[in-house]
Image (cartoon, rainbow, N blue to C red; front, side, top):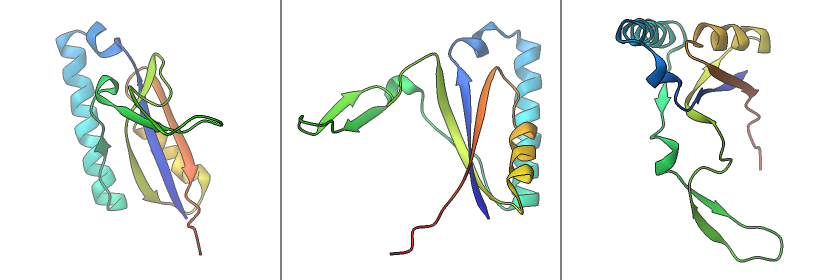
Length: 116
């Protein structure tokens, strides 16, 4: 089974950290990224900050729009994602736990491949 795991961060939390805390998180992220590559054969994909996002939206009764900002604005925004092969949702959740270093969340979803 394939799983999509997003990593979300709360705006302003990184800035609250001391230099040594940032270095610790950076080292943890590096170690996690290396383990992810070694054990699951995949990479982390990072997003530009949400203020650089644009959203294409169509609502009932309105024409297609291109809007500045993320699709779901708020204090928590997606920082990126990775896709892994795992035997179960529980295994995917364990990877999400391994990759959680800052205040925020990881969303885990099984990928259902479309078969036309």
